[in-house]
Amino acid sequence: MKKRLSGWAVGRLSVSRKPLFLLICPIAYLLNRSFLCAVPPFKSMYEAKYGYKVNCVLCHLEDGWNLNHFGQTFLRQGANGKALSEMEGSDVDRDGFLTKDEIAAKSNPGDATSAPDRAGKWLDNIASIKPPVKVMSQVFPQALSYSTLERALDDDEMNRLKRSAGVKTADDVDRHAVVFLAREAKGVAGGSCYVPVIEIGAKGTEVNVFLLSVNPNGKILDVIAVHVHRNVLMKEEFLRKFRDLFPADVAKVKFPKGIPGKLAEAIRAQFAKYASQVDIVIGP
Image 1 (cartoon, rainbow, N blue to C red):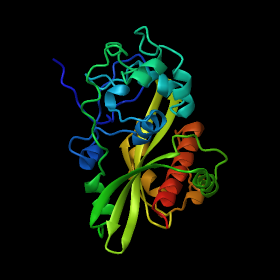
Image 2 (image 1 turned 90 degrees about the vertical axis):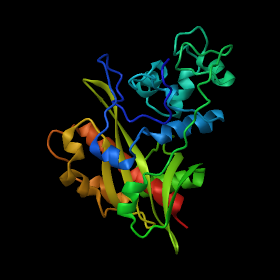
Image 3 (image 1 turned 60 degrees about the horizontal axis):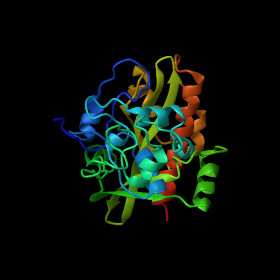
Image 4 (image 1 turned 60 degrees about the vertical axis):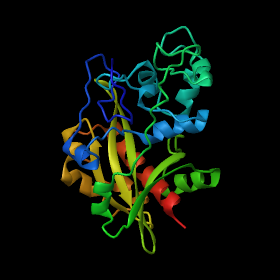
């Protein structure tokens, strides 16, 4: 019998045909000894859209944490709300049922053994998203407690997000905020969030994951590479380029040679948007 794990896996999120295995870097180990949480905004987006909690096997296989058909399709089609809507009319897991019918019946649209008439127990073990306390305590040493806040930004907040991040558009993954709050005696000391950066390259579509921490004024305090596909992106000399910057200043960061222009643009945009998002969520 396969052991069912809970949480969102930080794996090599790729839709290439090569075998993929869960890779946990030392930083991820520091974040959580059983670190299995990759991109909470994606999970939150699904839950907000369809109205019920899910776990990692929506997108991941149970053995090895490779992506299943649902995860592969979602990532390939843009990993946003539009992708979810487009997937509803197809049979993503090839079990004879449309994705929208599986979602309505709360069966797993990424698992061919789960269908509307036999949903299974995939929703029995749903893990909450826990703050990465060990790392946050280094960024916010004065904090007395840590908590997770999940909520959707309203239209006014989305407009603020676009203005403060210096971007023209913000796809709806940014509307669904999952922010880890650090609280001190006087109030909120700051917040952290996971930042997904999608890269489309020769190896397929991959997700790089960073942990970004921001103070109540919107200034970036720290950036940590949780799971990335290029060594240069986890180097201290690269990550410290973003520290002490406000979202509007991120666009000025110069990238090392060898980083494709589209990837550099995506990192700048995501860091600015998520720093702004945390600022909006924890602000007065």
